[in-house]
Amino acid sequence: MKNKNIKNKNLVGIVVASHNNKLAEEIINFAKVLRQEDFPIVNGGDVEREVYGTNVENMKNAVISADNGTGVLIFVDMGSSIFNAMQVIKELKGKINAKIVDAPIVEGVLSAVAANSSDMDLEDLRLIAEESRNFTKLRKEL
Image 1: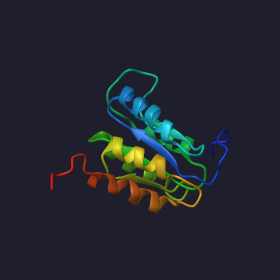
Image 2 (image 1 turned 135 degrees about the vertical axis):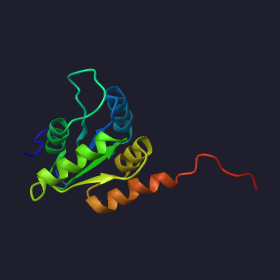
Image 3 (image 1 turned 60 degrees about the vertical axis):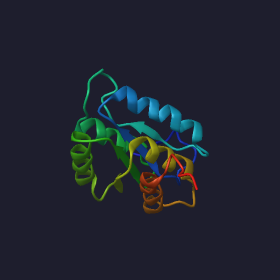
């Protein structure tokens, strides 16, 4: 089931799954400002309820919704979001190419969204997002 509302079908989809669904939604809202082209960025949490945590079914639906046929990067924060993402990848194996990104959730999502383009494949975009963990916010004085 591919996302038919997105104009560019060649871009990697992104799922953000945080233990705090409002936090994930705010990361998504901020990331959309940096988006150069139209591609799906989906909340992998339980957006219908104000609860903490994630579950496999919601994450699976988010990955399916985010897929345009190019694959999906899943950004997680900790604990069950990681385990649920791993389960989703197993369940969708052979149907959707999805990968978990090992990066800080905010910096990783922003890096991936800014770099996502039609000449970027899933693995290259994952590597760019994971490089965000090396981003230095403060420069040492010379």
